[in-house]
Length: 352
Image 1 (cartoon, helix red, strand yellow):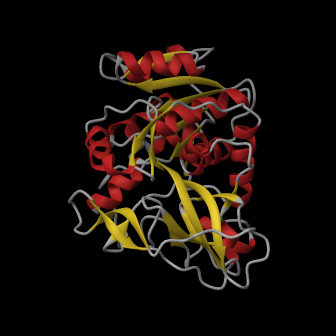
Image 2 (cartoon, one colour):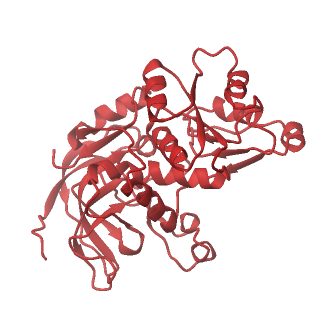
Image 3 (cartoon, helix red, strand yellow):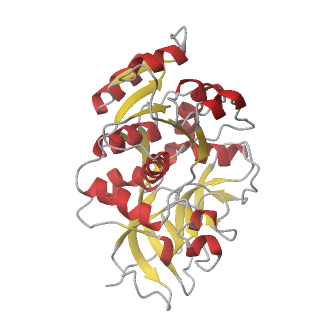
C-alpha cells in the first residue's frame, strides 16, 4: 500500500509566544529511520495547547511551534527500521512523542518521566497539521473500526484521567471527586470512573456543566460558583458524609488545589493533574498527618495505560462528548477555552 504524500500542508503555527497561531502552509516532514509519518485526520484540542501557546509553564517551548498532541490518523510512510507499525495502520500521536526506553524510568514503564522524552506540540511539532512525524515505538495503536474523530480526545484527556484514577487507588464502590468535571478531561474522568465502578462527585460551575456531568453518570454536582461552603458541600455529597475516597484535580485555577485536602476523607488521596500557571499547592501539615492524607501528582500515562484507555473506548464504555471544528478555527477555540466556556472537548478536522 502506498500513499500520495504532498510536499506542503496546512498547519496552525505559533510564531510568537503569547500570540494566536497563524494558519499557513508549511513543508510536510519526512520520517527518520525509527519514525512514521501520519496523515492526521482529527486532533483534539487540550488546555495544555493553550498553555504552550502562552508560554505559561517553566518548560522551554519550541518556536515556531505546531501545537497539538491528540492526533488520530493513518500511517502513510515509515522509516527503514520500523517493523511493528504498518503503512495504512490507524494510530495516534500523544503527549509523549518519543522516549529513550533505556533509562531507569523507561525500564520501569515510567517513560513519561524519561529525561530525554520529546513532547508533541511542545518540544517537537504536534498534530495541528495535516501530516505529522512521530516515533514508531510511542504511537498509540487504534483499531480500524474505531472512529478517529471520536477517539482523538482519548489520546490525552482519556489517558491522563485514566492514569490519574489508577494513581488514586480508588476501587469499585468508592467515591472520587472530580474538580473541573465539566471540561474535556473531566468528562472523560466521569466516563472512566463509571466504567471502573467508581462513583463521582462532579465539581464545576454553571448549569450546562451540571446537566452535562449528571448526564454522563456523576452522582451529584457541586457548583463552586454558587456554593457558600465547597468543603462542606463536597463532604455532604459523599455517601457517609466523611468525604470522597479520592480527588482528581483537573482545575486550571489554584484555589481548588488548596481546598481538596480539607474535604477528602481520612486516608484519602488527592491527585494533582491540572497545572495552573504559577500556582502552588498548600495543605495543613497537621491535618495531612493526623488524617493520613496522600497528596500526589499524576502525569500522562505510559504505553500500557494508553492501550488500556483505548480498549475501554473501543469496547463502548467511554462516550465522551465532543464538537468538531475546522483546523482553521483553532484561534476561536482558544478564545472559548480561555473564557472557560467549553463543555466537553473540541476536535479539529485537519482537512478544513
